[in-house]
Length: 425
Image (tube, rainbow, N blue to C red; front, side, top):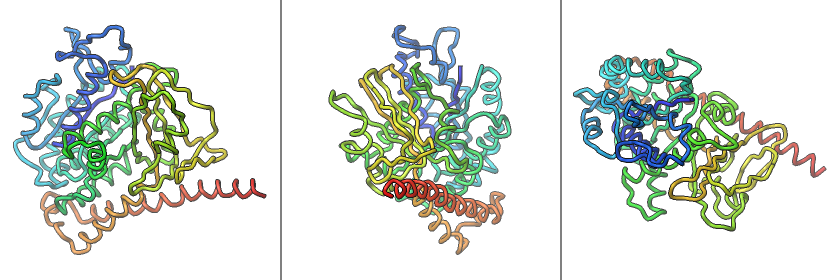
């Protein structure tokens, strides 16, 4: 069994992680005390996210951390999901929205307190495949403690997959420190993380408005959890094309540092549909219509249901609502499970490695330069033990990643243009 550890950090990460567990419980037919109520539903892979105790309860394999006690206190009081209280840690302080506090001072002490739980998960797992982390890039606890955990897992075992699911707050930033915090944690995510699924607060609010939902954190958390339920369906249920963390990494990350993926999913319950309609014509599942260009280095199509037939096709590159063929490069793959969601007959998910993330990074780059050029708020981080060299290194790493997006995508585009010209000739 390939187990996964769920880790929620800070108020945002804890809320998203708990919502994800709630939907896992529902998807696996677990009742209020987390016992299986439908024995006919496949449970061969339920241990991917759960440990079974002596009372046949399935307890999620998780860890929740925050420097403020309020989020952990609410976690203990809620009754929708059962979580081992020994896996929840907090301190009676706050991060002051500073990455340095979460990384060096209070956050480092909290890490020392919880390492025995992580070691226990490593020792008791038959075949641990990796971790899924939830946090906000702008928060001091989320960004700082997340960096500590990333470093710890890399030192513990290089073979385990680290999958981060950060929430970016670009466009609704409440503090200039959030820009610094994001660039610092980006430095860790660029260098040592295997997969990053990007979630953006502005995009989540737009989804709420388009679906006539109140734009609040609760609905945003549900949207994120629903997309992750679809992403992990092939991890948790059998199918004729199974998926996993390592398979996801091998197929979607052709270049190690370009591992930032954009998710989408949609429910398909109508009878007359085609995969072409889903991808580009009618529903435009692969189209970032708002602000990101639809050009992909690689992508994954996730099918869940019992009526999907995926036509055999060669490798494809999606750009501007069209499907372009790239000869000699396997740029897409698909996973499938026939176990339907309890509420929907068929669901299609999508993960794309798009060059649109480059523009997103450039905005953070511009904001960071404006602040750091004036040395604004740098003293706050220096008082916590950080050095100005760390600012320079984080900025340099961000600049390098932005520059790397161009050549990789341009090389693929040149390959396409050459083939097109040759065909016309």
